[in-house]
Length: 307
Image 1 (tube, rainbow, N blue to C red):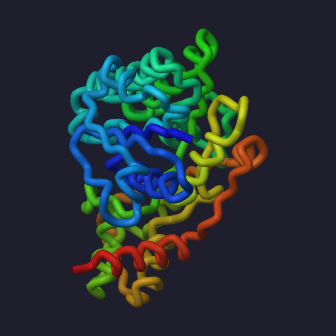
Image 2: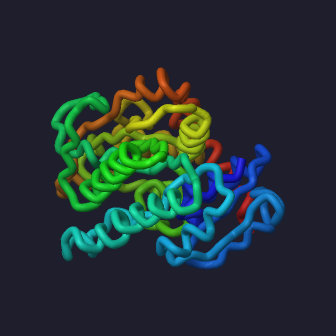
Image 3: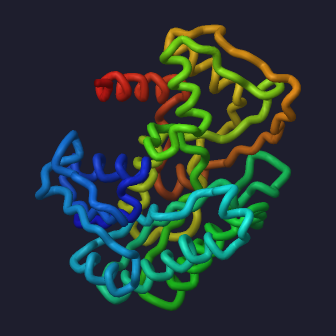
């Protein structure tokens, strides 16, 4: 299969490129900046064709010639700076580029697209677990933009010969070289140095989490599911507290018990997770990696790339 992956330089994008190149697919890795796919374990230059794109419809249509399916990951992530402006940055970076991708699929003859959406479309739910039957209720501009992308794909799928699957993905656990300041990356770095992991309050705030390799597996299942379309929850099926995440990281990195609690800070005590049974039934996907196994795998990756 010839597969195009947008946002190929991101955490999920790189993992997708590795997986599909290893299994023998021809991968077109799309990104705004040049990436060298000749090194590491991502495959040979013959298996991975890196291509710089401006994400315009014309450029994408050219890049998608001969492509059987698209995995659309390129997006602006949640950002306080963008939120201060409002919806416009997300509309331009997420919604408009998604429509460009959809138009390019039609012009190039590509008939299948899998889009990365987000658990953030449920942030106003006030209940758990949430299913795909629940009316979306984003509380921020990022989640709203992703919901718009889903609806665009839905309408294009009705009006044109295009099969679209949208995966609502939980908080992803993985090595994110572009965001070393996020909680997971910061905690792993601290634990590796045997330093304390700081938590606000009691660390009771909980999130649905999923390992990046399980996310890639979900895209693989979605591509293989003939005639299936719509939205699917992809998560761990439970909420994991910040304290449990910190304790698991410390256990894996031999830093057990090294936590600090700042009880003067107001903590987020929300508790949201998704029901993923629809993905199990219709895509044949099921989470494989436990929280501990995920961090143990990341520890091995960090050790293999250490200077």
